[in-house]
Each structure stands twice: as C-alpha cells, then as structure tokens.
Image 1 (cartoon, chains in turn blue, yellow):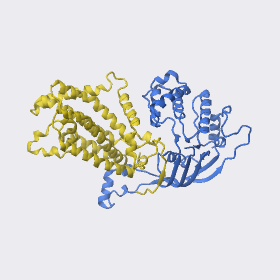
Image 2 (cartoon, helix red, strand yellow):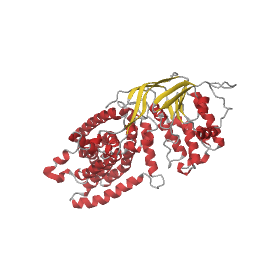
Image 3 (tube, helix red, strand yellow):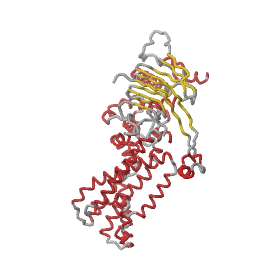
Image 4 (cartoon, helix red, strand yellow):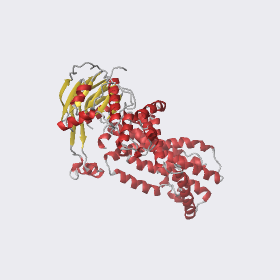
Length: 270
Length: 274
C-alpha cells in the first residue's frame, strides 16, 4: 500500500490522424472489396509518434520534473501515465492511486451549480457520497465563493470558475500526483493560498510528476529532471537542491513563491 | 491489431480495468452512471415547472391523439388499441433514442475520456440510464390507461420489472457497439438514424401483427418486435410468450458477447479516435 511505483519499458504512443475520408465506412468497405484499388487511402493514415520507446522507473519519494518544448510529448506522457492513452507497445506498470491535474476545469458543467459540480467531480473520482459530503465544506471554504456556490457556474467570472476548479481538483488524496503545469490561479490572495495548497499536496504524495516550463519551479520542487525531445528522453538527471537553511523535503508554509513573476520571467526569456 | 503493450495498473479503483473487464467494471459502477444520468435529466429540465413530467405529459397527448386516429384508420377496438399503442410508443422511444444517442456516446463524453480514466461502459450506461428514466416517467401513462379502461391485471404483470431490466441491458450492449463503431467510422451514425426510422414503420408499434394475417411471420422474425412484446404482453395481460423471451435473451447473450469482443479489441483505441 505504501510503496508506489511507475515503471515503463520501451513504451510507444502513436496517434493515428484520420482525415475525413479515413473515417468513412464506405472507403473501408470499398477497400475490402476491391483489394485496395478504389479508396486505397482508407488503410493508410499518417501516424504521429508522440512517445518513442521511453524507458524509465519512478519510485517512492521521487519528484519528477518533465521539461521540453511544446509538442515534445510531455502532456501525452502524463496522459499515458494517467491511463487516458494506452501505449501501443511496451510495458507500463503503475502501482498506487493516481490523481491527475491535467486540465483544471475538467468537466465543469456550466449549467450546474457550484455545489453540484463539486459533487459530480467527486463521483467521477470514484468517491462515496458520504465522503464527498464531508469534503464539500472544505472545498467550499477553500474556494471562498460563499453563496455563489448555489448559483450556476455559467454566472461566474472566469477567475471564480478557476477558483472552484482549483479547489475541486486539489482536494484529492493520492499516492501518485500527475500535474501538467504548476497551477497558478486567481488574484494575489488566492494565488498565495493556492501555492501553499499545492506544496502540501506535493508533500503528501509519494510520487509527483510535473511538466513545467519553469526551471525555478523544477529546481525547487523536484528531485529529478527529465528532458524530452521528439518523444524521447534526452536527459535524465537528479536535481541538486540548492543549499539553504530550510530546504527540507516538506516545504515550509512560510515560503510562498511568487509564481506569476517566475512564469513571466521564464516566458520572456524563452 | 498491432497491440502487444503490457499494461499493469494494479487493483485500486475505477481506473484499473482494461478492455476485457470494461463492461463488467462499467456496469458495476452504478453510483457513477446513476448520478450522471440523473444529472442529465435534471439539467434538461432545470428551469421548467413540470420537469421530467413533461415526458409523461407528452406521451399522454401523443397516445391519446394517435390512438383516437389510428384505432379508426386500422379499425381497432380502442380499449385494446390505446394501451397497445402506449406501451409500443414508450418502449420504442427508449430503443430508438438509445440507438441514436448511443452512436455519439464517446464523442459526447470525449471531454471526460481524455481527462480521466474510467470504464468506457460508464459513459454508455449514463446514456442508457437517462433514457431509461424517461421511459419510467412515461410508463405511468400506460398504467393509468390500463386502469381507466378497466383492464384486468394478470399474474404476468409481475414479469414487467424483469422485462424492463432486460430492456435496459439490451440498451447497454447496443450503445457499446454503436458507440465504438461510430467513434471510428463517423458515417455509421446517419445510417443508424435512417434504419431506426424505417424500422419504426416495419415494427408492430402502431399496428398489431394480426393485421398482417397470413404474413404475420414478418413480425415474428423481427427482434425489435420481441423486445417490445417482452414488456407489452405482460402489461396487456396477454399470456407468456416464450418466443419473445427466447429472442430477447438470445439477443442479450449474442449482443454482449459481440460487445465484449469489440471492447477487448478497441477499449484502448477509442480515446485516440476522439
């Protein structure tokens, strides 16, 4: 129960790209009956290899930072670990309960109220109704939305929607935490709170995999950095922690980084 | 299919399933699809006064108007024809909307499928359950008609819940099959829509097979007729029809077998097709 792990051996993920004609039943049938003379494109479609024979092993206590350009395969890898995409080839072994923060606003139903959305999300995460009810208050408190939670989500401002989504998706308990980009949401007050909550979440999970474009973040949060290019691992190195007074495994709550400053800095540098 | 990947996710929660146990895992997640299905219904009627009872009302109006008209056209006894038509329309409504919505199950649930791993069958059961709820809301019309017309209820009435359960399960395999095929081949959907429309006129919903006289065999080889008759016969107080049960159970076994094979082959491919 306590030991979580992820091992991958030569996993490959390929996306078939179907143009309209490839989705056509007629073409597929014609292809069958004519031996490929008419509609011969039905069998051939371009394939994008998003992950190309990756081999790695993550074990208890590791915090992995994934870096790489846009389109290098980071998000696909995260989705593969979550189980959305199954590898076409290779071996993937996952031990432990996974929680993923891929898209914060996952499944927010605009016509349902805030409370209903919290409930639905809990159900999708496989929680029991009693368990969800016990968490609703905590989520409501954290989001600071008060009575707005009784209104349909479509009446929210985008900032409020993000608050709700963030509070919901970070209220999970899991052994393995998978994150696409460090989330930073809301106004200054909320941002500080959010950053603190993420640190706790990271502290409680036994394995963390986070994709990020911010070197400072990886330096601060991760113990291992994996660089990906064209779906292959090009570098896999330990992150040497900066020697400082209070740099322990569990980050102290007092240290609240200004994430927005970090992100703008790295973006302008890139 | 070139798929020699070995995936091992342990046995922890909803995420741990693969193509071979997706159907079972999905159907067993009653709480998940039950909640989502209810939510869909509530959502659709959020700002209306009657809510889901619109289904009841619209069924009642449809049955009364069509019943009055067609009992004349087909020279049928209205006492017999009204409940016959009502049950037929209600069950047909379920079958046709499950088939039609089943086609777009996975496309409609793409936003969830690409975010969170739960059995694909959960998305299917959500659709079937929400249509089943509509069926349950329309069924009171039938019961009221039976009582109002002074029809006696026979012992066969007790078979109705079992018949409804079978109907629900038929919906599941039909939607799994259509959902997978339509995710891959997008022009199956209009074909299905068309077939359903034609089948309505070909199936004894508005007319009873006795009208056909010597050609009644047309109905007895129509699986959809047996599916309707499964619910209709006990409600009408007709004696048990073993052919209908044999056809329905046979369809259930063959259908689930096919759905299972399809799922085992394609469970892992569906997310790529969306």
